[in-house]
Structures are given as C-alpha cells and as structure tokens.
Amino acid sequence: MKLSQNMRKLNMLLTLLGLTALYFFLQNRIDDSLEIPMIIGFGIVAIVSVIYGFSPIPERENGDKDKKV
Image (cartoon, rainbow, N blue to C red):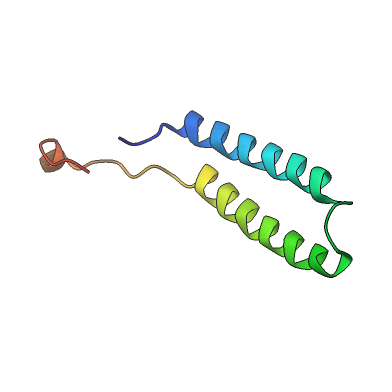
C-alpha cells in the first residue's frame, strides 16, 4: 500500500520532531566524543526523511491496474 503525499509529509514531520526530542533528551547524557557522530546520524535520517517526504509519488500506467506494487 502506498502512502499519499499528505501521509508522507506527516511522516516527515513526526520524524523530525522525534529526532529533535531525542537530541534534546540525549544532549547532556552522552559523552562529548559521541555528540558529533550522533548529530551526523540524526542529520542523515532527517535528510532521507525530507527527501522521501517531498518526492513525487509515481503514477501507475493504464496497464498496471491489475499488478500489485
């Protein structure tokens, strides 16, 4: 089942809010040497989420109605 464009944007928004909350929760609890890798990891997840949230949903062709995706 494919997600509609609004569901993709909602997923992106919730992912970004979750990453922000997780960052503030872990900010003072982890070692300083792990803060940069954590920010890089969160950045990668955020970029993938934004790309997926704004990417167009491919249209099915006329002959693809019977095929399951």
